[in-house]
Image 1 (tube, rainbow, N blue to C red):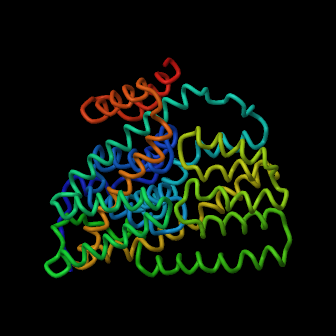
Image 2 (cartoon, rainbow, N blue to C red):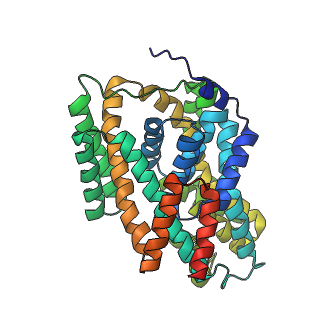
Length: 405
């Protein structure tokens, strides 16, 4: 049994209301360019470095958990952070705030109310990609300093980075973290991993009781079985869309770009959305801040209008919500076990290695093409590390600099 007296700032942080969580994530949803990997950097800067909602180890634990679960990892991480702060209402508020800006734009694009061509100038897009390089580099640097102390952890970080670069995709990421967990268990399992600060999290902030978590996991599994049966028994367009997008959200591992072939097979082949429109919408989704899964709103709007956009958006994110809210109460208990903490010590080092590999490919390779790109990335990195300008202001300014360059 672990008993802890939370520090003053920990007590204060749990008084945050769902509205405060919504406001914070709304700002992130308006400024978090760069895709899922960059989102991890934005979240770390906001909630670990700035607001101190949780420490570095607890943050890395949540990143590892969301990497193991199917669905959009960065959105799941946001839900988990909101859940820790304000319960289920906080998880919902975090998802709404982070998703709403890009979802509204994508819905309008799907309805044809905004012309898609030239929406984001190429220079601005290039500048935003450069900003993502600096954000991810800052996250890797900060996490490595805290989670990779000692040569054992440095070796695990290097191993994970190498494996992911040699074996891109989900297989390399999960393989690196599983092997690092076994290594951590072998290295520190008998005497316990290096001390990890354990923050007291009230039951209501951790997803209520374990019984509620078990119920939500049962709902997740039941919908996976019942929605296809309902779609066959009552052939309604909205029900078919709900079944399709729920299944995609529940079964895609890795999130982000991994969802592209699944969605293409599900919506283009039946004729719901034309292939050209599908590809154009997907390209625009990458130019917007927030989660890439908001592309579902575009597809729903293109398939039938704004009600279908809402159905598709909710359906593709619902599995992530149920899984995070269902698993987190058990995770909060498990991560305090000494052997589990030993395994997590290895996993956390591997998470840094995975992020380091992602910093190179695709973040660096897609953004740094000229010496001016490199200089801009270095300037933004220095500003984020030692300057006083907040990231939400640095990122749009970097987009303007990209347009000027």
